[in-house]
Length: 91
Image (cartoon, rainbow, N blue to C red):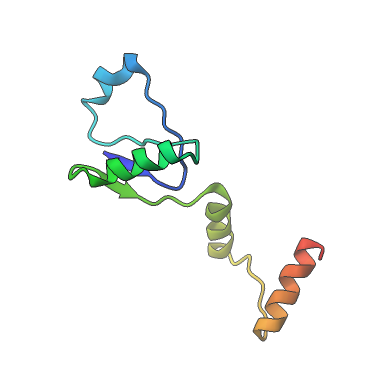
C-alpha cells in the first residue's frame, strides 16, 4: 500500500473495499489538515506494510517539466534571483 503524504485526500468507498484488498498498491489522500487527519496518517505510517511515497503537487510537477524543457531563468547572483522573483510576482 502506498500513501501520498503531500496530496491529502482520503477516499475509500465501502463497496470497493473487497476490490481494494486484491490490489497491491493504491493511494490514500487525506483532504483535511485536522488533528484527526494528522493522527490517522501518523498511525498508518507505523504499520510495517505501509510505504509512504512523497509525490510533488501539480505546481511542482509543472516546474520540473519546465526545467527539463529548458524553460529556466539564468541569474548572476542571489540578489538578481530575488529581484527576478519579485518582478514575476509583481512586487
